[in-house]
Amino acid sequence: MLKINSNYQKLPGSYLFSEIARRVQIFSQEHPDADIIRLGIGDVTLPLPEAVILAMHAAVEEMGHKETFRGYGPELGYDFLRQAILDHDYKARGVELSLDEIIVSDGAKSDCGNIGDIFDVDNVVAVCDPVYPVYVDTNAMAGRAGDYDGEKWTRLVYMPCREENGFLPQLPEPDADLIYLCYPNNPMGTVASRKELQKWVDYANAKGSVILFDSAYEAFITDPDIPHSIFEIPGAKTCAIEFRSFSKTAGFTGTRCGYTVVPKELVRQNVSLNQMWARRQSTKFNGTAYVIQRGAEAVYTAAGQAQVKANIAYYLENAATIRSGLAGAGLTVYGGENAPYIWCKTPAGLDSWSFFDQLLQKAHVVTTPGAGFGPNGEGYIRRTAFGDKVATAQAVARIAAVL
Image (tube, rainbow, N blue to C red; front, side, top):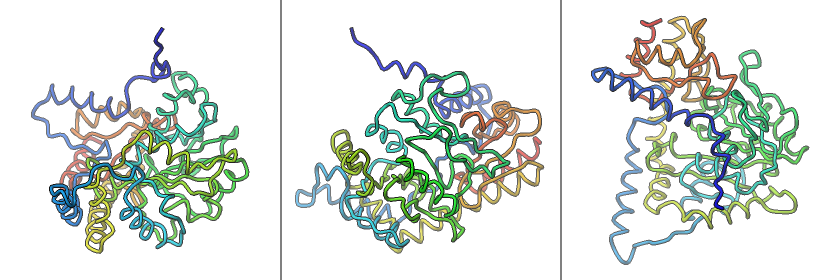
């Protein structure tokens, strides 16, 4: 008899952002004239940089001629993009890698979820709490999370990130085999110092664990002392995998391109995890489109870098507007200085979903309830800086009026 993957049946409700979309849709149907401003899901609003568009146009033209047409590309990415990534994202920061340690994909979200394919289902997984839901849900789908008890998954190790500890996780208890870290952090907007990351690298090497390091927001770091890559930390190549994305860096949320770095030095049970991931990708994924990879390559040109930095500065200005405006309205806020996310305490007496509903109904502003990111997210709301500048200022003014 056919059997389905029963782990899917254990997932509570819908995916966080699907539930937000459902509530917003209901409100919109009931109030069709409401001018809704979205500070919830982290989707960008600025168009792709001009350098990217020009490169993609040129690549499309190539695809229209027999002499330059390309069919299936290399599953792990074209060398022209991998070389640009290597030179600008790693060598420029003193990190030595080889091209075949960089594997191009359709985004960090996909890779963060799919990386579990190369690990046994019995591995113990540790996540920060609050946490980006994809880390939890994909492990639940695979059967690593156990059962959901109404608040937590029974087999996951939760690492509380609370105000009193600076929203930084402590080393997992009990020990964990796979450890998800995200810096700059989504949802809290916090960053980790070199000293803090060294603690995790030393732990992972001592225990034989693997750090799954999501650095999708590294381009928003403004503090020169904050590392952009886990591989800037001594010893990381023997214990870490890094995920990166062009989504928030260069506006590729709908264009889809990212990459994962798996060092050859990362070996477990005498098996190269680099070779395992390459095999997984070449078997299950036909590679990112040539046109898209040419666009991503253009991010690293002089013009592309200038345009990307201008876009990031625009979003960071939005973050400053949100931080100062909400603080001025009497709310306690964190993040938003080296990240596009602002983590905000709810007013006394309101849980995060109630505050979400209040802001939607009274201010017509969409946010993200902290409870959707885990038990320790209760009592907080996440706001993103990816909106239009004028709309962001209007949203902050509306929220202040409601408060």
